Length: 338
Image (tube, rainbow, N blue to C red; front, side):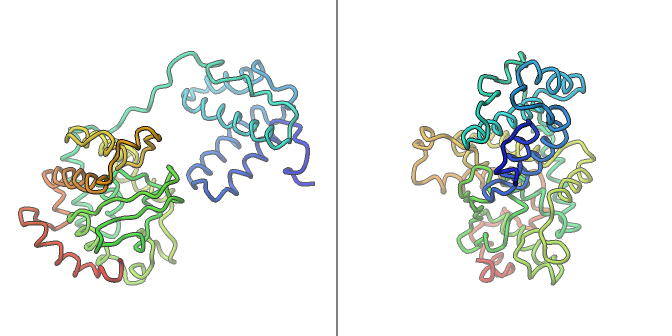
């Protein structure tokens, strides 16, 4: 008898059954699967895995899971994620008839935590931008094949998982757009990013620097053997670049802050970093949204130019962009990419 068809007697039965559902769901991102797997196996299962579903209540959760996490120095956000995993698992088990009663139904995280759950402060601020851009651009200039990832993320505010799944077939240098398919995005909707002359030039330099074998692979960030760069390896790269002082997500936060400083409309800023705006807010976005996004990125990349972005792009923006872009397209072999 499989776990999916058996009666789920213990909390561990419920969590492992739910985890298998998460891992088999093709619409779920790899990063969510990894973090969920880690939370279930490292935190929830050792604490309450053997507790019978009929015995799980607020006191047991507090004694065996929440309070030990507090005593272990785990942040409130981590505690909340564990609680949310339990709630989701038991709700699905109840809806599919695998448990007769849901002991989590009446419980909320506020039942255990009274204080506010603060977001993690950013490790990069606006004052860090000039030095950061010069450093990343210089690294790229020395070694384009290994220097593109952080610059591309800073330029567009993309998430690391979305960026690592980029393929050359997603990029049209003729249409000057980067398409992020819905299955690659946390928002689960297709995301379109306009490409500025600076980024087109950056991609051209990058592709020319790739070893021949990797240049033939469709992945934007290929490794030996034809696979794409893994999130684990990418995270290690960021730790090495930053000396452990900031993460890939800090680039995204910095880009969003700088968009606000540049006077970019709130809705356009949120659209560029692919935040969900809600149905009501979406109505404020008109048909010219793509052009407005392009204008915002041009303004942002002009700011990067002031900080030394041209070290990486090799593009002198003092020359009219329209007179340089055709040359860039020829160098990059756009016909093959588009």
